[in-house]
Amino acid sequence: MVADFFQNFYLSQEETIIKNFLLASRYLDVEGIHNMIEGIERLRAFYNLVGRVNPDYAIHKNLKKIQGLHKTAENVSHLYKQQQTARKWMAESKLDLSEFYNYLKQNELEERKRFSKACKKFEFDYFNSLWMKTAKALKNISADYLQFKTEERLEEVIDGLLSLNKKQKFSINDYNKIRIQTREAQYVLEIFKKSLPSKNNLSSLNNSLQEMHQTLDKWHEDDLGTWLLHDFLNNGSRHSFYSPSSYTAFQGNLEKGKKTSLSVFRKKWKVFLALIDGTEVLNRSAKNAHYQYKS
Image (cartoon, rainbow, N blue to C red; front, side, top):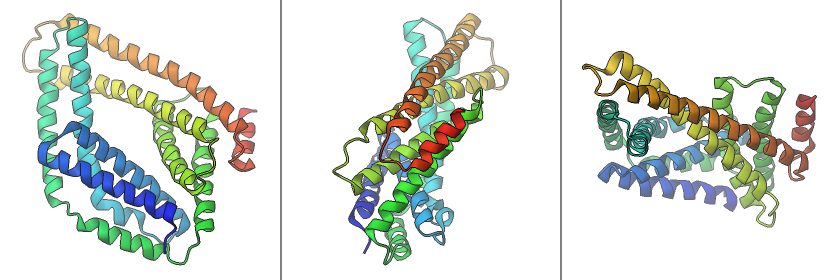
């Protein structure tokens, strides 16, 4: 039998994914799509942990179906957020971005078709099969060992973050790596906290990880917006623009947004490093790595 804290985390994500899949697939509900994406990302972090507990577990093979669903849903979500950003600047700064907005909408409609196609191929029996394979992979593994491997995985992800601290300057790839790893670290921390319900001194670390990946998510959306605008200006437009100056101003706003997000992130990164210095739950390996990379 799989330990309760492990199984309960899995079941919680399965419930989230199924509930929001129904909203997303039947009504193309944007919030449902977003929540489903988050549930799949939590499930992916869970299975990265399962792979550390039992290296013979075929993570990529068993998650292939749901990863395809995640990819198409994420494309829809990104394009919807880009339209929100365009609407915001059209309203607040009176910019005429109607042609770019229509370009985004057309791309979103195409991605919605791909998402709907992926939904039609997805069956809920997948989860029964997935959990049976998981239970088999974790058979006869004690709760204490699962707790140990969960903390070990948390340290592994955090060590990966700390290893970047030796760099003088982060690259775009580094920011994306941090964005992804802080999210995974938060989700693994959630599992770890379930194994130690009496431990309340992890809230600050949880909040720090969440704030970092949310800040970098905002940076990523503005970076994607810059790329999409560039694609539109160079390849997507078929007529002269109503207001070329609007696009110049919009591009400037996106670049400013990116700089602001990175400035906020750097402050939150310092808070994270200080928290790791003072976190007693993590073993000394993570702390020693921090000291090593700081020197």
